[in-house]
Image (cartoon, rainbow, N blue to C red; front, side):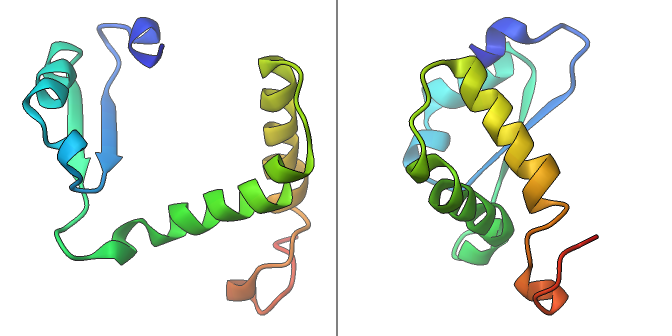
Length: 102
């Protein structure tokens, strides 16, 4: 689905770990076909993606597991609302000394 939306002028970087699925011949060939630059974490450095992993764990725990979504539009709306109206604005963050960003 993502490749169907790409324009020839788009500059895309796709980051992943070094799992075999992401370094396979077919995956690399497909990325080249769509002019996607592949980026990988360093071998043995699991903390390279730690911030993203923690965010998605939190999103899943605080939003996704607590609700049933009937449509893709509803999911998109709720995730946007969670990120922009709660996570970035009101949620207390450990790295901020348990205060909200605003």
